[in-house]
Amino acid sequence: QVELAESGGGLVQAGGSLRLSCSFLGTTFSWYVMGWYRQAPGKQRELVTTITPGGSTSYEDSVKGRFTISRDHAKNMVYLQMNSLKPEDTAVYYCNAKDLRDYSTDYWGQGTQVTVSS
Image (tube, rainbow, N blue to C red; front, side, top):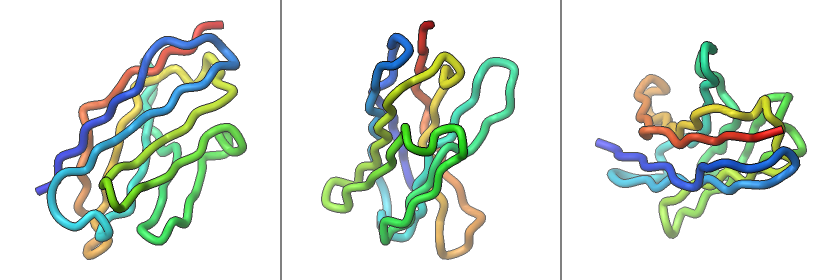
């Protein structure tokens, strides 16, 4: 069993920055691809970025060059540094852990609200 908990959301003006954190509690952190998803009001949840245990990353096109995902294996933490924020980045951001052993087991955090004012 895995428990994820996000923190770091808040209200920021356009052009500003936020850093989200996700703590991972449970079994072996290196068994999981970690990711951040977001869901804006009235929209489906979308994948923002992922990071493998080895550190390979991928990003959704609209956040490339602005967002950076990282993970700390010593602390079992995942981070999302968000720079040059835009109002369209406003959403609830969710931390996700996908089990590499079967690629079908997912765990989710409770979400953290990010609001970007124009």
